[in-house]
Image (tube, rainbow, N blue to C red; front, side):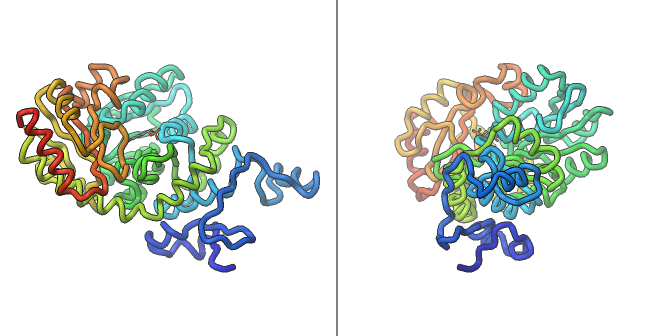
Amino acid sequence: MKKTTGFDRSKTKNWHPATQAVRGGTWRSEHGETSEALFLTSGYTYDSAEEVAARFAGEAPGMTYSRLQNPTVAMLEERIALMEGAEACRAQATGMAAMTTALLCQLSAGDHIVAAKAAFGSCRWLIDSLCPRFAIETTVVDGRDNDAWEKAIKSNTKVFFFETPANPTMDIVDLKFVCELARAHGITTVVDNAFATSALQRPLDFGADVVAYSATKLMDGQGRVLAGAVCGTATFIDDVLLPFQRNTGPNLSPFNAWVVLKGLETLDLRARRQSENALAVGKFVESRVPKILHPGLSSHPQHNLAMSQMEACGPIFSFILEDRAQAMAMLNALELVDISNNIGDAVSLCCHPASTTHYGVSAEARADMGVVEGMLRINIGLEDPRDVIADLDQALTKVGL
Ligand SMILES: *Cc1c(COP(=O)(O)O)cnc(C)c1O
């Protein structure tokens, strides 16, 4: 058996991302299996009482309990870290478990967090509802406005938190500016990179400290499992995040980790093809609707910034119809594209954010971030884009556009 690199970075770190995506972190058992093994086990057994004591004391290598370590989950974590260019990664059960862990592991009562106002509904809930309950001060800013980030800094500011592109307004945050600003003030940036993934955008290359994921989206990419991940320095992951994760238990199941491992093998192919398809479909939609928010189109006010930090536009964009009634009618008229609030999937999916992903956000916050009643968000999959365009064409015609 050979080429089982496991966690030997001296072998894996110079591989190109495509190689890391299919081989990074592979840790073969004594059977020499080609596909990563699924260790569906909660616990481990030991040859002696002294051995388990040594493992718990950190004096001997080896696993002790799957809330603390699991070989399949560890393979996924190593693969994501390599692809992200991060020293370390830990996986969580969902994207929201990842966001909650990434924030609460480092914040205490009296600290201050600045977050971009345009965000996934549950991410906004963490800022608007959860943090204040634990006396963590919060400020939301327009993430597109570099000055706003600077003005929001206080002596107790510990974290900047944002998505780019943001769900579902497609606002872009200037990664280099905001990450450098944070670093100059000793503030930790936490970037939710779900819309791009490491295939299209690597925030650490622009100076971000922590990258957090819903791996449910493009990483799995086939609408199968929920998963999350947080990447950062070894010091952050081992000393700050791990004590929180091990004792609160937001862990990813080995089965779901195994599914995402297989998803990562095709991430680059899918992300690029879905971006191409989203560009083709976006150009068509732009010709028919009053307003489109698509980072790959020159009509997006931050198109140049987006394309300077992303390799391609990603599979998701939003467009705005007259009102909720027209948006709902458009969804109901779709024949190929499914009505679904998931994204990153290989099938095209469309939803009405105001009544679904952002239903739990207050009406004022929704209006403030630009999630208007006529907005639809679409994920473009791997279908032939001509079929998706034909479906949107007939649906737009039915609603009078
Ligand atoms: C979906 C999503 C999340 C939450 O992920 P789950 O896996 O559904 O918990 C967080 N952030 C963004 C940007 C998302 O799109």
